[in-house]
Image (cartoon, rainbow, N blue to C red; front, side, top):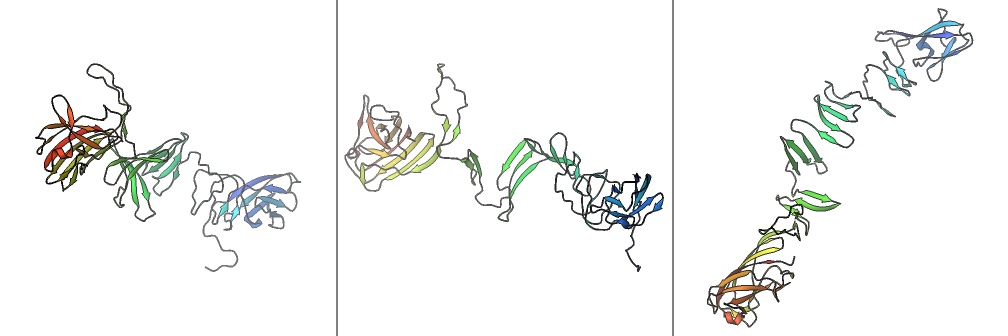
Length: 398
């Protein structure tokens, strides 16, 4: 429909009014609703409507009603027209809203209070937004929200269930089987790590979706890596570190003697092979196989050494081992005497032997044992064709 002048309103509402008291001298009065022009008001003095602009004007803040001449003593009133021009204005001091509709952005420099309300667009707070413990609804059906109650706890509710809670010194993740994910997005893979809890079982996962290569779980203290679960599932410690049994209580021996612990950290376990050699065998190609198991600084070694058509010399016969012996167990000039073995051929006629291992060395001497003592054996005494096997257990230097 065509019209001349101002566009008609498309809806109607209830007009609001405000009553003032004149004293025949005051010309400026404060409105409780901001307006943009004198025509936004209908002013009645002594029940006579006043002429906008000529009889009264509106101050620059939109809240001042200024008369050309002071109203007489007694009450007069204004009626706020229902439609307010759609332009951005500062609504000003604190307001308690009944029903107000603003079709453009408004600025409230004071507080706003009301029982209900809605915003069709974005709301920007340039200062503190005080919810005063009121639940902030986030979705259309009202079951996702944030609440900060007087218990100094922030509650995040999803599907009407408290799923995430934040307190001063704690965080809670709640649910039937709660999961806490940490997602790496920089490579586009969304690689996940997380904590997962189900029926009393806590699972910790790195690369939970199995999209990365060589993933690991690393443990730091004081800014230094101490241990890690590597990609093959093994737990690896930093050098010279291990499992500390210091809190294990000391037992007593069979006679009731108390034990004294000198070391409580298990810092090494190894299984492996090596190729034994001897400085008494100088030529040929002996067959030599060695195996070991090392726990902490205690190692057990098994050796099989066979010579066929080999050359020998007059050096003390012995075998080089993969670990040096410790220097704290000296008995005379040797560190240990708790190995045993046998020759299967050669000039020794299959006699049993014991082994002497020098402190700080890794060369085990082969010695002949008889009823009263042991004696050294040279390479020449064995000849170029012999076989032997033995095992020895000793403490290592490291």
